[in-house]
Length: 401
Image 1 (cartoon, one colour):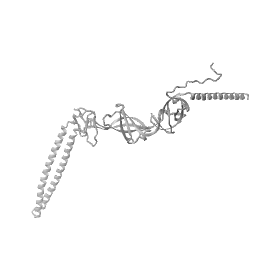
Image 2 (cartoon, rainbow, N blue to C red; image 1 turned 135 degrees about the vertical axis):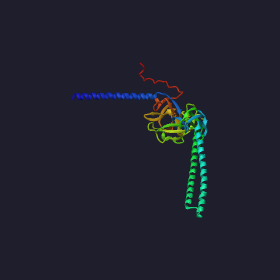
Image 3 (cartoon, rainbow, N blue to C red; image 1 turned 90 degrees about the horizontal axis):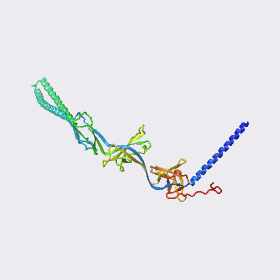
Image 4 (tube, helix red, strand yellow; image 1 turned 45 degrees about the horizontal axis):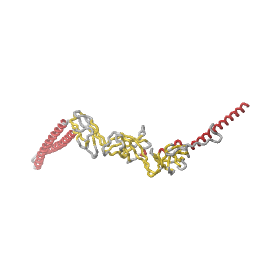
């Protein structure tokens, strides 16, 4: 029992001692905070102003031609001539390459000869039909006079119908041979490789050349690539956070290392309807007019897209935003008292340089440098002012020893 009583006394003593230490530490901290507030902090300030602020997102991507295709032969043959090289401008219908076409010319000649034979055969059948028809009509007249027999009439009728059928065959052969001639001419035309003609009027150039004259080509062997660079497409990939804000027609500002200080404008024309599962990004295409032909496919570009803009709104430097006790705010300057007041704020657009203050309504100047040492009500030293170097006098009776 005595031991328990002693233990209780010891614990009580330790508790009282701990409380005394806590009180002294707390008083010391409060004194430190009080002394800290008395110390003037040198700061830099910027006036609050009314201005326009834009919310802009930055992306990176690559340039692609508005159209790109490969010219290749539809038939096999030796490449006799190639008339263009990389960088050459071409237009629709322009001849690019020629294959050795002797074999295909012979096929055309053969098809023409077979057509001539078919036409001669048709003429022969027409003449034969005329003769048989006259004989048939004469036999009918004789039969009416009871001069020709019934069997002779039947034979004449049969021969007439036979010649009619042969004439139809001859006509069909003409159509067949004409089709064969057309096919031969088409195959002959395939020996001349041309830029396709269509309604698109762009600026087409030869991008790559894959073969040289004299090469033996199989069907579909690439000869040259053709690029349309009248307009270019900047392909960027947008993360899930920005994806809902991308809209068709949004203006984009494009820059590239090839032309520092020069910017180009474009517009969003296509937005992928899904995000890739691995990257959580969506493909977005921006069309860029390339009037001066400065931009080239394959260039690395930086793309800025403006999502929003607020005009004549209250803005402060983004560097003025601070947090105290997890509350975002700014330090407003009280010029007369030379103090900084912490004001919690609600921000709107923050673009990395400026921040929009939605509320409360503020005016004056805000601290942009040195606020990491400030607390609400702290004394400050403005640029151009000299710090107060006066020291507090020691209390009476407690001079330096």
